Length: 252
Image (cartoon, rainbow, N blue to C red):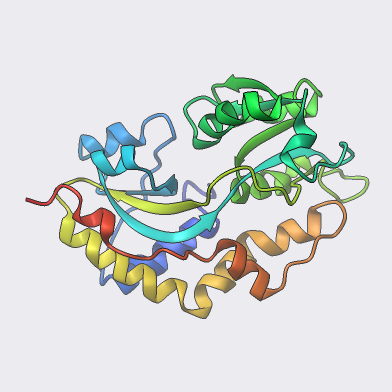
């Protein structure tokens, strides 16, 4: 938030997508992980955008215009933590997740097969603090979110100019297709948004916004100076599913 207005990639994406959809005027309204479903169900807001991954449970409740972003589930570790290259490297290590998240569900599946230990908490901040204090080896959620956490001021050393954390190049679960959620009544609006998303993602604006608002800052601050070309950014994060399938759910 900056002067009570949202900033970052999704704030930029929201403006471009709504413009492509022909929306003349809109007012951004903050909602949170804990209340966005209630706010949308009670019509306090018309749509919600903010790392909402497509899944069957959400599609049963809402229309989902997908997808303006794709990400995998990853890990956030201390910068000097033992490297991990495969899931088996996590045997005996404590992984922190936020209760009810897709990563939480994924880690529960891996808990037995990979021999890892799982700690579920209520907020991302709790997980980051556990990693900082070495109570947990890693925090697991969507890679794109973890990259954002590495760039926050409080997570960057003033002495070295590098983040205290890293995001290893290890994928922990299925790809997440990030969607815009709407009330079930808004089928036509959902389909218009899908068309607008398609226009935006295939434009240079999508790549410019993602690099300018997140990727380049992450590459600058992450330890080890990782490198991502434009082709790599698109390969990792460009949606491979942009369609109105979830808009049609519930139609009569």
